[in-house]
Amino acid sequence: MILTTVTFFLVLVVLVGGIFLQIFLSKKNSKWFGLILPAIAFLNSLLIILGLAVYDGMKAGEIFILVASAFLLSNIPTIVLLGIYFGCREKMKLRAELEKMSIQDLK
Image (cartoon, rainbow, N blue to C red; front, side):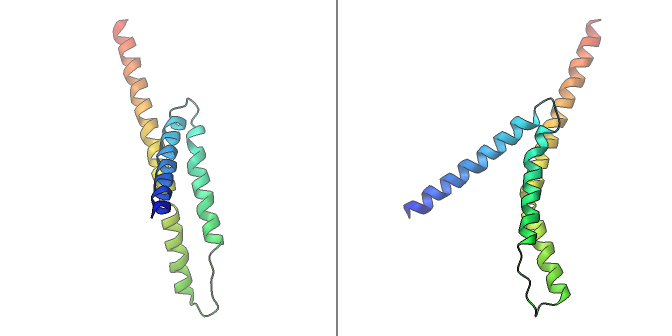
């Protein structure tokens, strides 16, 4: 019981830390820093796909459903990280436009 609680909090800390790291990297001036974690998550999903076990008795449709569902499920972190990235970049873009407009108003 105690081990599962500790494991839960450890996973929670890693997830929250990853989200804060993604926000921090997305706010950097270079757009490439914010794409590091989504790229790692996508490569991880490819490794999951390559690690799937396909048996001789499986039909082509079953294999396709297995690969497609594994690909979609393993890319949920990639989609979340990209959403954070694009959200932060859009907010930075709006802030820069507002700053540009306020400078033009002062002239």
